[in-house]
Image (cartoon, rainbow, N blue to C red; front, side, top):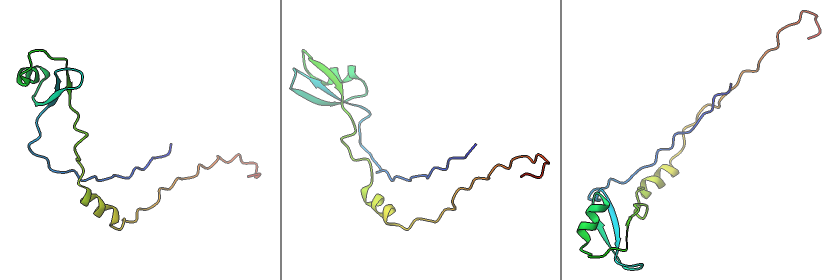
Length: 101
């Protein structure tokens, strides 16, 4: 059995503060919506102020840049430490005792 070796990638993340626990888009109709900071969809419905709601959608956080790009660039330009190559031992066949090995 061979042992796989994985390189640990350290990815610096930004320290974020002030982000709401949840963010929702509450739609009045198919194209008009408001962004609401709320813990649940029910709280978003209560906070939006609309009498009739078309739909409620959780807003994604992937629009926010969560990586610290400057630290990432510094890590990429830093010299990498030399790591020894993984080695495997070759299995030896048992001797048959005939001298034909």
